[in-house]
Image (cartoon, rainbow, N blue to C red):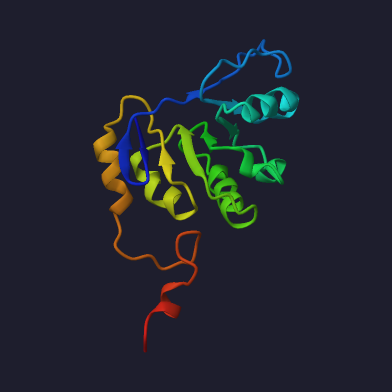
Length: 170
């Protein structure tokens, strides 16, 4: 189960994670809806594009130390782009999401995966995430509530182009 567009839904996507011994160019990508690591996309691009042309849906995920610009010109190919949060304190994924939405104009599903906690989700939503896979063992219903923690935002971001002082009539 994941949260997508403020609803809890069943998730039939598989996130492909590589073992340390796996080489991106030779790892077997299973059939079905798969979210592959960026390294696999870059190494097996031709084969994965052929799968997509045959109707297979494809997603890609980025590690927090990778740049959104690596997908420049390719974002429209993916039904899902996920960003991995390896630990709670690693905020680089926020910048990746913001760049995907605002610089690369990605409009599909943008999913937060990894160490995703309730406390972060409102802010993740602000920079462009619309889907969340909360950390295993956490109450998904409580996590869903976090998306409405605040009724007003002060700063401009992906979800609100104008800061509060520009939105308020004086």
